[in-house]
Length: 539
Ligand code: C2O
Ligand code: CU
Ligand code: CU
Image (cartoon, rainbow, N blue to C red; front, side, top):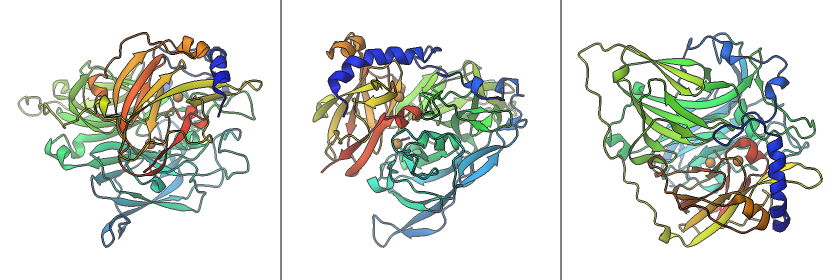
């Protein structure tokens, strides 16, 4: 473990150093390209110069089971079995861009969608059939990516799934080409927009960037009863930004140090929706349900519609909100999800663009009204009961800091959770079924989307504090009143934005299974550089 005192007294210096390395800051407090990445691409593709809205939006195929197998949780019962091979393929990200090499699940970029039901388990055999060499720059100085390890290692995690530890995709449980892992997803949880992605220690950011992610939907009777737009009127949207060269190939930027090519952030200028650049979708003048996942490494999205109409948010990471929450802008940090409804009735005959200003993401081409104008379909006023977990239910409160740390002498940067590294002893050992409050005190200048595996939680509140004082003296002084979450953040979450200069308090019931899990920042570059820690659910 890093010496806490030294840590405290060096953090201020580390912050200065990191700011010097990050000239361009956005309003959101996150930096755009910390290294001049375009300068590194000898022959960059300029997405700005491409024709817009010439390709239809791809919809990833829905997976079909490959038979059934015995349910590990209930002897004598059979449950669906899927085999999903990971394969290298070439895809067209745009009509006028040469084919791009990507790594996929089952040949699809993004991977195929799982359609599942709450309470009905399934088995998935994830088979690594990738080539023997990686095509993106591995940093062998990072934890778990040592040069004597195989280059191509994968392990799949279903983000947001309540699963036994051995099926959760622990980062060290990776396997090499020619091998596979059989995972059991009991699905004992409510309807939600989950997603799956690679989690291999030290290279997860490269594997996901290469294309290893897809959607995993859990449905249930409560959701069905709401009669939300379904079938062709329910559209998955996976957002991922990439840097490409003029040959259409993925570029992952590197630092100036060939021995430590890690970069602290990845911002692509090609913003892909379901793997396409500037796609369009033909829609009818009616309500659509959009299931949006931020599958980007670093980028936070601020989604809005060019028509100016509000987006009705009906769900967040772990399922339906208590009631629809109209949003002029939907904010999604990496790994966060928004389940939304957009009614195109009033845009009949027009074009509406989903945007992340100044970027255009997706154009909806709304058909004209064929019959007499239909009334807008009203959303149910209440969606699902989301009982608030009272703070008094917590048996323990943990104060946990989020840190950027500069290693003395080498000046290497580390991003840490509570000043500890991945291999330090496990310090978070909640009891199965117990409720805890985790206070995430962000001492850095970045927003960190913090994710806990296996559990769902609620945001209690955020409270401003004096981070400079904490960094220099180690004493806590709050500077504002606690602020409760906005309606769109008041549902069940599994990833929360910990804003700089704030303590973000979450309340978690460790419901599910005993065993080793993890929590981490979902900026994949941060997670790879130690902003990831195990936790253990104990009896
Ligand atoms: Cu999206 Cu550790 O997960
Ligand atoms: Cu996860
Ligand atoms: Cu982070």
